[in-house]
Image (cartoon, rainbow, N blue to C red):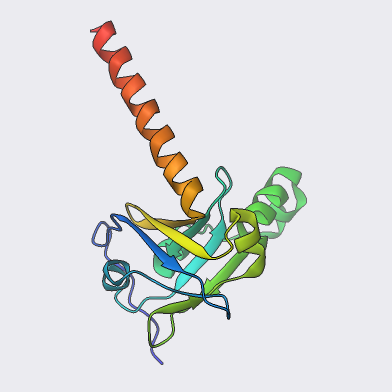
Amino acid sequence: MAAAEPMPSGSAQFRGRYINKLDAKKRVSIPAAFRAALAGQPLVLRRSNRLGCIEAWPASLFEASITPITPADVNLEEDDDSFYVNYADTVDATPDSEGRLIMDAKLLEHAGITDSIAFLGKNQIFELWEPSAADAMIEAARARAQARAMTRRQGA
């Protein structure tokens, strides 16, 4: 099988909110709109460093962000921390012929996902959330954005 072609910068955008069921084998269907944006490319799934969700990165975008390491990099605690945080809980995932992903149990546990997954588009990546946590995040983000807008208007 040939390697996936990198996604041209800025070409694929993941938009929208979708909820799909997790089956008994821990598989979930990627929403059709997201599959179309991926154009057959594999994913890198990782635990979010800031939020209670799973980040889904197109493999080419994730790989483009990697800076090669040198022996000196593994001698610094800060660099080691970064490597563990960014790579130890990272899973390569290729959708099957029906567009389903087999989900990693530890990632599901991190996100509190048990039976349904909310897919949230986030520009060139998307996130996988427990549905009620996704709703709460969207509402909290909307409230923060409105508060910032009000502050800017009052300061103008």
